Length: 356
Ligand SMILES: *Cc1c(COP(=O)(O)O)cnc(C)c1O
Figure (cartoon, rainbow, N blue to C red):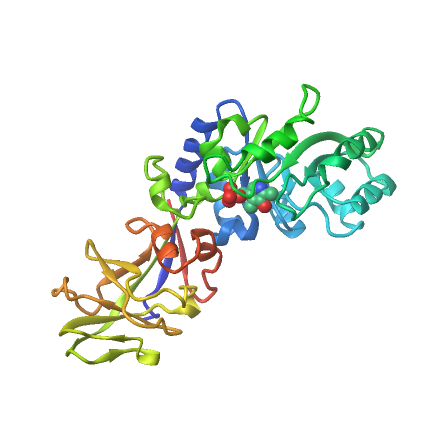
């Protein structure tokens, strides 16, 4: 018997979540964001379930080439553009769309010899200060691009730092608005803006985490009314149970000490599986229809839960760490992180099943 831990990827929930996004954006086209190997789910295994997307947005040329070799013929967007001038040869060969955020990329594009002109997304730095041209140089960049023969089309692009708040898109949206006219398409909305700022949808949205059923704000309550469904369940089993007395401690560092007699269970899941080591006492797990809190420190291969309210629980019972019954956001929030990080961090040693 292998160690009883596995992840299940729910392919039909991708298709469902994409249809929810479609309802939100109306006529706008959807880039399904699949960077980081589809947020830890495997591009190769899940892209078919998202084949009704208008395009796929990724980071690495390798990911783009994989998608082409898998048979995807639609648009592919490189969200951070290319990392060296030579990459333009592959962008040309595989017919990719590239973001542009720096002057050296304009130079490279101008100097490249390509078979067909390349569609570009020109990134405006609207306040996040990560990538993009500053507002005061943006018009000149657009002007310069209009004269480069290697450019097939130009789309305006920016990225929001605070799309999960009520007014978070106001200022950056205002900044890019001064460049928006009828002549060029616009793509600025990430998941938060897809859900909560319909005025930012324009021609294309770039939706990521909501396709995976998690909240852009990190708080599941914020998407509770959206009918988005989990795409990843992490599950394991109880491998030991104990009755402990008042005053006894649990795990490394004896971080939890019982103040009354308790029934506890050891679960075969630890930080080497991608479970967050910083998850404190009280972080929820799901057992037999109940939430059972974690007690003490997370070990490399195991964690401990309180089953005092679940006295019939026994060795071999299934424990869900996150997924269909327990939103990944609730676990992430308890551990001081976001669902995005937990998905991406699923460890290689966890066997993954893909289920329709
Ligand atoms: C990751 C990313 C997105 C998607 O973000 P979500 O919050 O997952 O929707 C969109 N645009 C860019 C540029 C990104 O890097």
